Length: 146
Image (cartoon, rainbow, N blue to C red; front, side, top):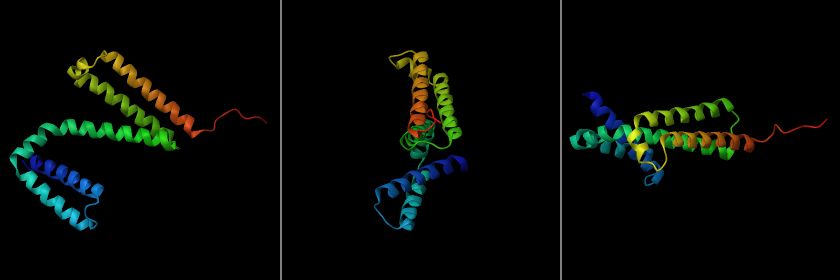
């Protein structure tokens, strides 16, 4: 029972606080926290909000993971990564996510204009090209003359 209230409370708290932080409506962090806690409290005590969040939250988590991975890839591609182990780990996470999406959301993949196998191949190609581009942007490693 407490878990059903705690998760929506923390989720709404984080979203409202993040929105207030990004929107820069208030400069004082204490005011942002008070507003966020108040909105989260009322959201967590409303049964309609908690039932809606319990239905939507799994998809929201997947969306946040995808956005995080895409943002991280853009950061790697834009600045170049000095930690290639981390880059490979992120690309591995992308591939695991794609394989997981294929098995869990088969109906979603059937709605795509391409087959699910082609979808995975396209994602693999994009991940591989992202890694190559990141390596290219990093530079170095070219032939040396003595």
